[in-house]
Image 1 (tube, chains in turn cyan, red):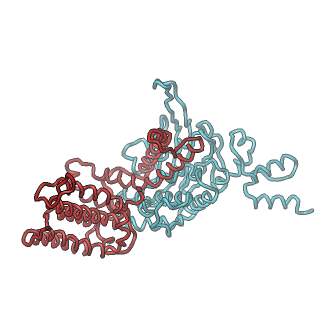
Image 2 (image 1 turned 120 degrees about the horizontal axis):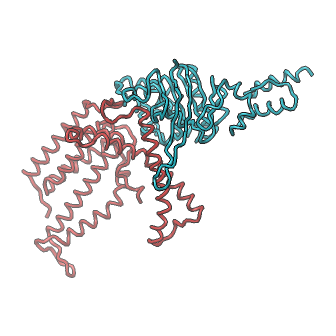
Length: 286
Length: 271
């Protein structure tokens, strides 16, 4: 059993009309079975309303399953006694950086989590220093969060979660409100955590470029898992992705179109370098 | 105009006063305020003046910066003392038209002037040398005993510090909404009061909605980071009294004692 496991996870919203009468139920998450191993980098893809954010909120015990169960580090999230253990094991980073920074100084915000957990003062300082260094924000520790850029703020949020020493970090569209530069900063920091510290990362996103580094990609649609596999496997099925209203990285799309018109290229090309290499294999001999 | 008020703003510099425990400064401000109202004679005020002057000197906050914040309050001070001049009964000094100016009236006006301006400078000294965060921490610790009678001290101070953090964010948001509404033809420039009030509606409604959304997000983020109230919480920057804090308390006691002794034994009266 991995660090995070979901068993037949179902979550239903109650739909109400204007008078408050129950109109029916909407299944936001429908029968999701996943087993995530410690140290994995998992990307969850899906267009708006595919249930990916609702799914993410289950992993941190913010929402509870209607049916089925979620286990974080072997602990059932629905049990009240497990609540703080679950939240400590699986940290969560949200979309809007402004709405999740509590402190007025960067270091105070990073210390907020450990303070809540009752960590001794000396250790809080050590954790704050180490987490800020891990995301490359140490020199900003005395700054006010209001004066940072979006990408920097989001890195502070990640450090804030990191200071709680989680085994797993769930990032719920952390880059949706950032510019391309900030997006790159955040993804770089997340990848470093995964590779250097061996922290399990679950990245919820709708940007395809962020997915290519993942060990495994889960594509969600209408609350169900529509596709599952390595980035290469997923991106080799360009037509299926289009059906699910997802964009494919430009290089992958170009390779796909070339292949369709007869150029002998392999499936699932993800990066420009790879594309150039494959292309020179085909045309190099001329 | 709001921007000119120095009260409540922090002035960043390195001084003994800045390094002092916020609890000492809070208690000190309170004691200083009380000392101003203990005696109504010049001796006490001279002592208060000397004390204030030395604290200003120690704080290293430029005097100009402090006085800049006083300008708006000056109007209020002026009005208060004028009323005191005209409405105090006593030994008449001279009359202007129908108003009798009394000896006591003039003395009262001067006293009130001194009291209030010392009071304002004294309390702004505290906010100038203490960050809002330290201030809320200090308040939480000082009011700690009230927890026993079920006063939610931790919650209140947490709300205060969150409010302080969100002020600039909401300001920015107001600016954005204002521009968005102006692009849709809203008029914020009108000089008429009624129209001014009407113009606030399309500004305040979206601002409130967004503030509620933010509050909801923030609550979720705090819970995700294991926030469960003040119970079992440790502090990253705990408040610990150091040597200078004890010295400061000592100085405060000496000051109050000398005000009481000198104010009672050698009172000097104006006029």
